[in-house]
Image 1 (tube, one colour):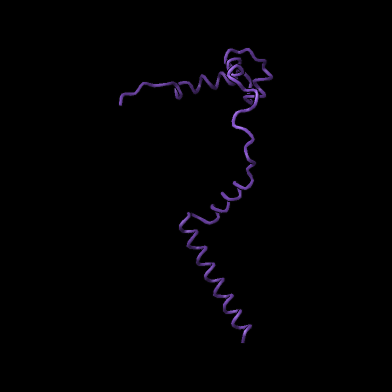
Image 2 (tube, rainbow, N blue to C red):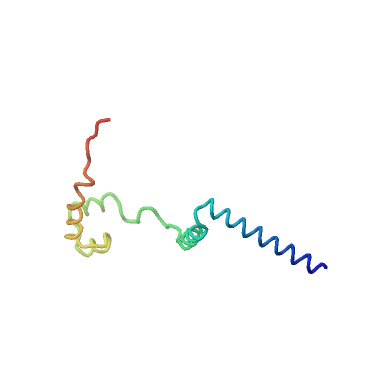
Amino acid sequence: MTTQLLLCTGKNYCQKKKLYNELIGLISGSQAQLMRVKRIKKKRKPRKYWVRPGRTSLWWDNMRRGETVDEEWKENLRMSKPSFLKLCDELHPFIVRQTTIM
């Protein structure tokens, strides 16, 4: 008798849990997507710093003036200087400051 009661309680619990999970899935989009987001958040390492040490305003000024060697460009910007300048030229029309009237 007690075994049947436990099985019945366990079965009801499983049904309620399944219904609860389905409702949560409907509310939050899809449960699989929610689980993926949780996994991604777990895998991220905490940031050590927002600005890399050694990158002062002088460092940026040197990069802008071109007083750095090509290896530094490759190491810091992950592309060569000519590639970076070409990319800047292509993006310039989209990122140039515009005057708007409000």
